[in-house]
Image (cartoon, rainbow, N blue to C red; front, side, top):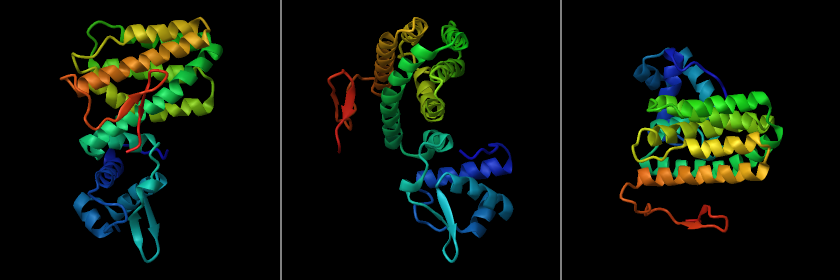
Length: 259
């Protein structure tokens, strides 16, 4: 991921351009009119070009002689980049694409986190347990501010990935956190969500006991609860999303059929 400061002219320009591309306002294949963008965004040409370098590093734009700077095909975008995920969740797409992205995230978590927690149960250190315990304690505070509840949940899942002591799995935090933060902001702001503490405590207890099987089972139960909370909030009347073609798999997990 190419880091940049979100504040200031540079950061604001990156954010503005990215959201226009993700929303389709600047479509794939379009050649950017730098002069018009410079005037519209009220920035210098230097600031605009520096901002485009950030987007180029994320696979969203490219610059070539004669053609100029253009928006690349979506297939070329780094969709696992934390900033790209955040932009998509913060208004870069339609409500339908937002729901689809949450479903994609749920599937990624169902693949990554049960396997990760098995490793964590065998490799965790006292420091890892302390980090997980601190996050769980923050989650259990009475009547927490939604923002603090979100931060505590993210801290728990980051600590869990860190407890695997696998550098590649730890980097998955960038993928999971962006979507999890968006989902949590919705869930923790709703009176219809369940208490997340018992499910997280079961995960921590199994990791503390160095029991990989119990840890995996606890994580799958946690993810099942997260899915139920999300469906309950997204469908308050209790009806299944009409666009969903999910079926229950052998392990009790939902699998989407090809459309």
